[in-house]
Structure formats: C-alpha cells, structure tokens
Image 1 (cartoon, helix red, strand yellow):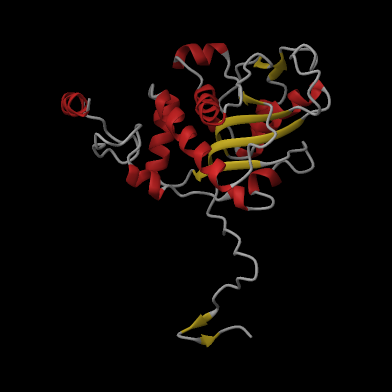
Image 2: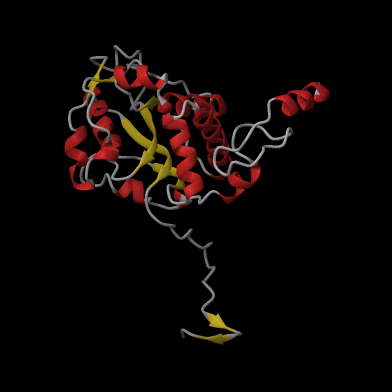
Length: 260
C-alpha cells in the first residue's frame, strides 16, 4: 500500500496551501506539518473569558467562544482564501479535524454540546462557490467528536454584502436579520426532551463577531438553549496564555530583579 501511495504522490504531488512547499507522502491533509506547528494559535480555550466571548458581552449570552489561530500571517491568509474562494473545502475539513483533536486533548470545550450549527451561506453564494466552508468545518469537528451537525435548524434569508466589503463599524448592521429559523420550536428540532440544548455555532473567521452574534440571536428564539462559538481564525494579535497557578512570570535580567 505504501508503494502505491509513493507512486501516487510522485505522479500527483500535493503542495501546502499555506507555504506552497511540497507535502511529504506520509503527511495527511493539505497543510504541511511545519505550517501546522507554526500556526499563530490563539490559546483561547485556556482563557477564562476569550476575546471572542467578550465581543458578545451585553449582546447575546455565550457559554464559550474559541478560535484556532490568528488571521495574521500571509501564510494563514492564503490558507483561508483557498478554502473560501479557490475551491479547496478540504482545507477547512482538515484544519477543523486538527483543532477538534487539540481541543479534546487540552480542554473540556465539547462537553455537553448537543449539536453543531454551521453558519448558513445564502444559496446563491453557495451555488457559486460549490460549498459552504462552515459546513466543512462542522463536518470535520463532527468526525472527531461524534457531535451531530444540524443544517436544518437555521438558514439564511438574504444574500447580504460580504463582511469583507464593509467597514468594521457597519458589519453588525450588514448582518442584522439575515438569518431565519427553519424550525419553530425545540420540539420541531426533536430536542424537546433535552434540557437546555447546547448549540455550537461554527464559522471560518471572526473579526467583529457580528455574523456569529446574529446567528446566535436567531437561534435564541427557539427557547431555553445555550450557545457556544468556534471559528478557525480570529482577527487580532496574540493573547498571552495564563501562567500556571503559583507560577510568577520572570521579571529579572541575569538574575537581577526588575520588579520587587
């Protein structure tokens, strides 16, 4: 089998969507191991309240909110563009699997989640693109966690202008009211016996959080539910990971204390 793999890799070489280098035959997916290792990870799942969660404060109640990496380097931006605009849904699927694995190993993020809700894409945009990248992210997470994906609960009723084409201050208005429930109640969803169903909304990139918030607000109309958020990328800079308990940061130079 390895011989066939080597032949296939020789005839049809794979190249990393982030750095463009050839991917070794023993590596899985469409992102090389070097790029995966060097992703500017957010560490949001290690924080008590992540920056993405804080974007929702005072607007919509959110249980937890995480993002895999920062949308900062040129390599990351190339990878996100490839999964959104250049017909590479496998990028979203692969990164989602990797992130789900890391979250399972390092946190209890998925505990109690009832269903995964991919942010809906308008049918016109989905038809032009050939897929919804959020569906691919949801499927990748589901494959790792076993949590079902529900695309039958919320839909998109308006093909609004892309968030990338409007100012940050206008993004919330741009997505206001664009989503609609496909189900009238938790009973219609088949979840009437579940106490406080917990929905995980997933998307590719979070900048102001406006799209996620709008989708969450529509879901809240179902009744007593809980909502968490997950994206592959997040705008912004690095967030310091909290030090271990009783582990003070080093504030000295060559052993000479700078702070008493």
